[in-house]
Length: 86
Image 1: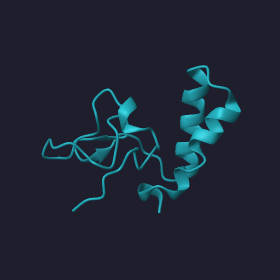
Image 2: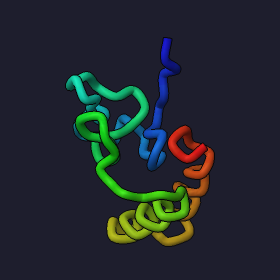
Image 3: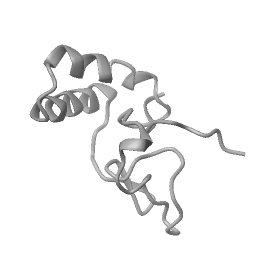
């Protein structure tokens, strides 16, 4: 049985904030690990190779959404510990 995750294991966004309720696997099933922004049809939607690239991208997006940079950093500091980046 797969562990139930509360947040995307790529970008750390809580699933409750994902308008699609999660990404999709190749067979169309909902992904239990990744959000719809990161994972579609069984593939990652980005070409990031490191957790640092994902962190930088997420910080930029959060700042665009008017979060202070320190708050954006706090939200993303755990990204290197997520399953995708282990």
